[in-house]
Image (cartoon, rainbow, N blue to C red; front, side, top):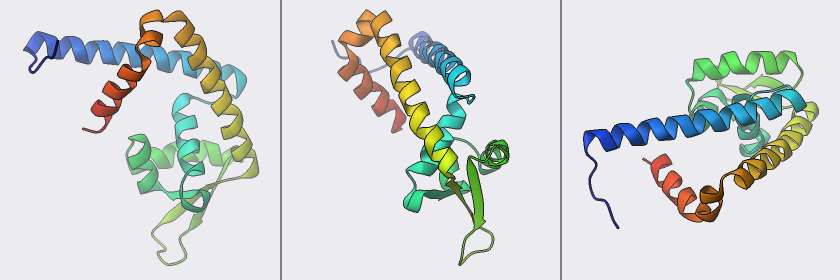
Length: 149
């Protein structure tokens, strides 16, 4: 069955269901990452984005686009990670207004360890959610389509 339009109630139900599912997932990931590595999932996403940036570094604007935050929110989130020795920030060689965030060796280790925690946590979620597990390819395709809007 293919749906071509949503009425107002369907749209609200979709938005609420997506929000509730993400909130629960984020709580699970925050609990796992917090107890094992001392970071939140948002911090993990930020560190992971730095790790996958060109030359293992990214500008705050690029990070903001990557993780869905404002550049000022990225700046606020990077500050404690820098104080913990996970991230360094250097001025761009050609543009003094541009700062590049890079992982320290400790930050690289943290991202690597945290990726395993995320993977293991999501495996446990999948074991508890039979329908999600059965329809995972379709679910991922639908969520990816939504993310591309």
